[in-house]
Image 1 (tube, rainbow, N blue to C red):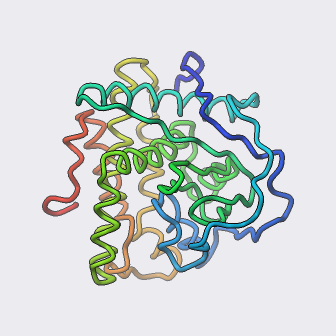
Image 2: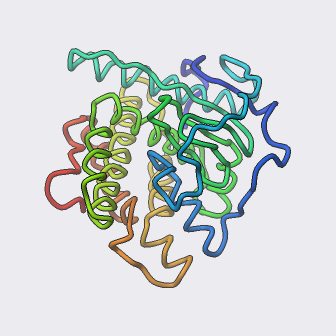
Image 3: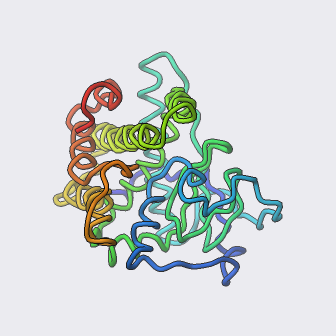
Length: 284
């Protein structure tokens, strides 16, 4: 992925220097915990899954933050990807007569208070709609490469683009409508709605990639395949087979590997928000 010439976002709170150090429980991604960690991977609201994150905002004081573009290589790369999502979605919203308000990205280590509860590196990256922030422990990318077998810079970019996709859903009012519908639905119906929400975020990641490549030529050989490997690795069916040897479709919350890849490719092929209607018809 070409990123050296991209504008690096300053819309970042970097608290890595003042978080970590064993403050919270660190769970490995292995055995049944693999399914748990990946259930949060790309999730819009970690409070909805298994009750592992408190629904009440933490009273812990916020750690000291560095605001602006990080100075380390990995931090600058993430800032470049974030900057490109800001530019791309601003342009797309403008074509619809709307204004894009970018999310804040919080970089932390191990444990971090958020408006959605206590963020932990064990749960992977997530977007909190209550404070409109994306939370990311960069150590997750090592797990993505080594344990999910999805290495590559563009696989990492896809992770962030998916979380920003959840922010886009929030701005468009889609996420709020889905959460309201889930409150009235059965567990199986709520899970099905979650799947459609996640697949749309995958599609929005593809929309971003298509438009960013058209304007900045960010893609190199193998990049799309890297993103597809990441999408396939965290499909509900793949994770459940790996963790327990069988699948329970009614418990899916993020979609199958095939569905996640398919919707990313749809967004990538079209580059249009309108191509990402996962709520009409069969999500496959």
